[in-house]
Image 1 (cartoon, rainbow, N blue to C red):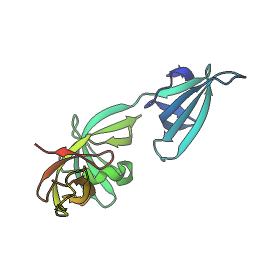
Image 2: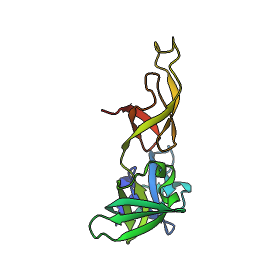
Image 3: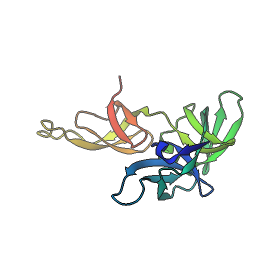
Image 4: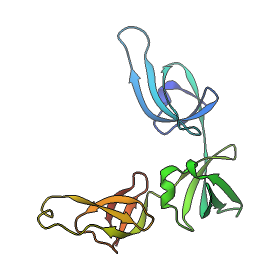
Length: 187
């Protein structure tokens, strides 16, 4: 679907130079001399490369609509992850690098969102947060509890994060999957 460059928003997926790009940043620029333009920072969906592109305000760009479907994570086999479509029970195999660093948070049976473009998977989105157990953390040092200080800890999946001083091994915590950060103690 063609849209005006003025309608480009963060999160839009555009087809540009025969590749799919997700818009990560936009800025409307109106120079003192010449016509206004949109400065868009984009990231390629398949390759991950970045591009800064200027679009004239009157220029038309191709906006792509992606189909999002829920899939259940089944297992990992070498460098591939296996998922099952929740509606048809068809299984697909995707390379682990499509998920990226967040693949460490995948657990058996987890429901993820797979974005498809013309029935081809192009990205996998995990739930925003997961609950994991702390298996290793440093002991509390007296006197450091007055200020909000953090200490390193290891989660049950092997990922290292920073947690508040009062969190000990055996505690379940909520972790943000997008940046591997501590959110809160699990209830």
